[in-house]
Length: 103
Image (cartoon, rainbow, N blue to C red; front, side, top):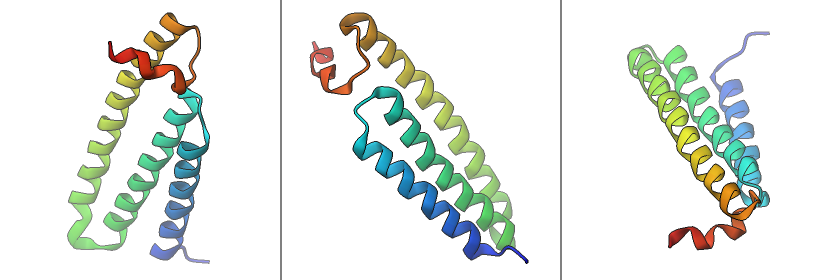
């Protein structure tokens, strides 16, 4: 069986839906971070699949995928720093307690 672009788009849509469901249901900071990473990985899968099946988009799709990976690494580092600060001040990683971090 030959895998085509619709198969990759379907897998990407599934990953995106799981990531959004994780974002909407989790109150734990690590769960939210995992949801964001799933959404970004779904976008990367779309970009790489488009680069594979559309010759005019080959270099741009790969470059955008690398850019998304770099942004995901930066986002993870900043989010983990915020979550560590939340844990040090409140002894929990529940994001509902993050309202007092503004002051």
